Length: 355
Ligand SMILES: *[C@@H]1O[C@H](CO)[C@@H](O)[C@H](O)[C@H]1NC(C)=O
Ligand SMILES: *[C@@H]1O[C@H](CO)[C@@H](O)[C@H](O)[C@H]1NC(C)=O
Ligand SMILES: *[C@@H]1O[C@H](CO)[C@@H](O)[C@H](O)[C@H]1NC(C)=O
Picture (cartoon, rainbow, N blue to C red):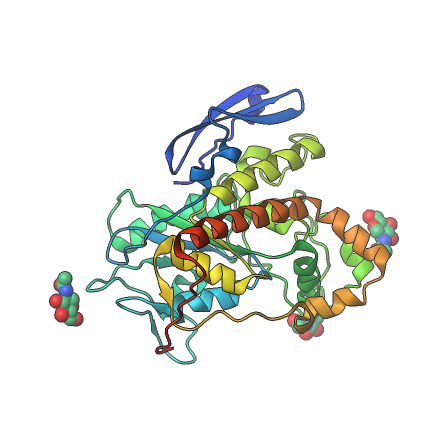
């Protein structure tokens, strides 16, 4: 599944062969003397076939959908679509006022969905790519009482990085901290020295925007890149392993590869298109159409509009990796969309049904 890179960067010159879910493609990752580049046997980035997934999901099979939920990307709404809005043989069993639903395969007690609204956060609060890959297979095997090779279909949703970061800032002001997030990597959680907290005390409700921008260990910065990258490649949260520039390069490249290797991803700004892409990629339909909130409707949008331009520039600098990742994601998203539109046309055919 996806890309499995191993932490062997210490040797200085490293060649890692990675096979994508499509087999066939061999990717060489070369790092020497502070520079890293990718070469591919058939240029992964240009391989159209490899970038487009059509993977009809069999809810009665063995495959499991794993939803990687990054903070402030519209993941709550998307996660609810997965448990409440999918037209499948056996819909998830959701009890009102209870946070979690039971999502089981037909005539089975086995689950087909790893997500907050089905299993909670058993791999840690808002577990990232690194944590999920280390945790999910063992967890599912324990749940099912059987060790077995299964296919894990990773999915996620991304958001325009400046709006996302501002939205996270607003959350801190309202008392969110996500301090229960583990950030586990290579079998351990980071030390205080590796990940110094941005605030003293219980929360960061008194944070001002300049203070928010000023905290260099602020996890809000480039959150999407970090949460999609294989952090083992950069020595996890230990920033002394390599120069910042090299760390950034590796993180961004890894995040792009991992995103591309995911079965599907959505973009919060393109709800209807994301719905269409999901339906065509996984061969499942939603009952109710996804709805779009305009940027002005969201808190972050409202705040962004009043931000001092100086802060916007700082914010962009602080999220440089995410901005590049998002631009890459958008291009890939629309390439996939175009592929399916060419085959199936524009029909959004949404049926109405129970919710
Ligand atoms: C699954 O269960 C339903 C009743 O809940 C039954 O009608 C059906 O035949 C079962 N299917 C299989 C494959 O066992
Ligand atoms: C934030 O922390 C302070 C104490 O440091 C506490 O009084 C306050 O209730 C907390 N606010 C929230 C929203 O948790
Ligand atoms: C930014 O951080 C530096 C030290 O890290 C500190 O001296 C400065 O006062 C901070 N500025 C703001 C606006 O918090």
